[in-house]
Image (cartoon, rainbow, N blue to C red; front, side):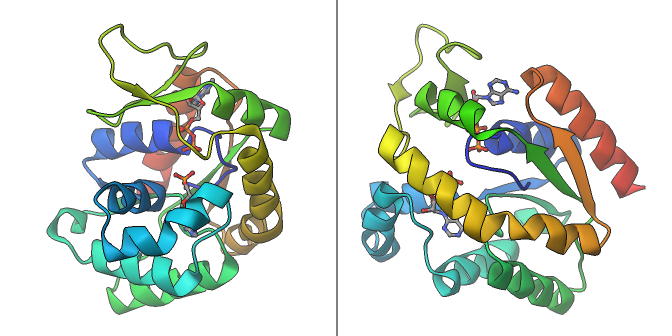
Length: 206
Ligand code: ADP
Ligand code: AMP
């Protein structure tokens, strides 16, 4: 899943993973989990996530390599938030070639920067279930145990958007050249985005 922060990658990745019985790999979730558990990796990346910068490629690639080898990835996986740089994408090509696997589709969820700011400012996640909500667009149930991500603050959102445009957006051309990119309008409502996305994934899986 490719797209700016706040495009709805996490929201949609969960839906696709469930529908096609695939593993859902969110590098952001893995980093946040390590930060919470205060592991060595967590200590290494905590200040990077707080600033909105990207974690070094070697660290991120090693993590994904390990994760892709776990049993639940046998049937495939939805990669959410990875790759985020050209070197990561090249490393992923290598990993997949070694595993005799390939990329079926790269859905590019397109959303304007102004909308990103609105979405991230209102994003809340449930600490217990990991479900993603929005105070206006996808309101949480009353019994949710909500958390506001520390990197969803205006200053950090700006930094993350800059990182996205300079380092991640070049992947649009990278995957378009490989013929696997499918653009999805991320500004429709969640159920319509999923319907379009599921249709594209089904077509790609054939
Ligand atoms: P990403 O994983 O790309 O950073 P999320 O899936 O966490 O994005 O979504 C960011 C925020 O936008 C969340 O608050 C989510 O509820 C909300 N959101 C996701 N998709 C849509 C949509 N199509 N319309 C409105 N809000 C959305
Ligand atoms: P996300 O949950 O996808 O919004 O990611 C949150 C943060 O985790 C990012 O701002 C980065 O600091 C870090 N991160 C997640 N995925 C990657 C990646 N593929 N490469 C580098 N940093 C990442």
